[in-house]
Length: 94
Image (cartoon, rainbow, N blue to C red):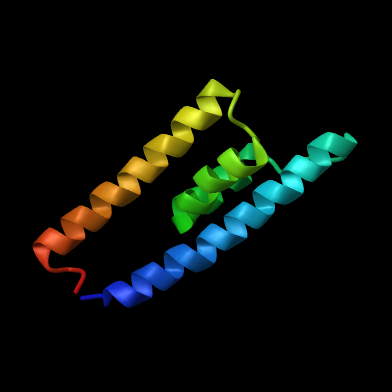
C-alpha cells in the first residue's frame, strides 16, 4: 500500500518539473534555439508530470496546435487518473 500523500507529492514535484521544462522549450522555440524533444516531454508526463504539462500547455500556449502531441498528452493523463481510481478502489492507495 502507498499513502496518498506520497503519490500527491510525486505528482506535484513531477508536475512542476514538467511545467518548467515546457517553459524552457517554449522559450527555445521563440529564440529558434535547440528544443526539448517531444519524447522527453512525454516521458516526464508518463512519469507523473501530466498535470504540469497540461497546465503549461494552457498557460504558455505551447504545443496545443500539434494534434498528435495534444492527444498523447491527454491519453497519458487519462491513464494516470484511471490508475489512481483503480488503486483507490482496490485499496492499493490509502
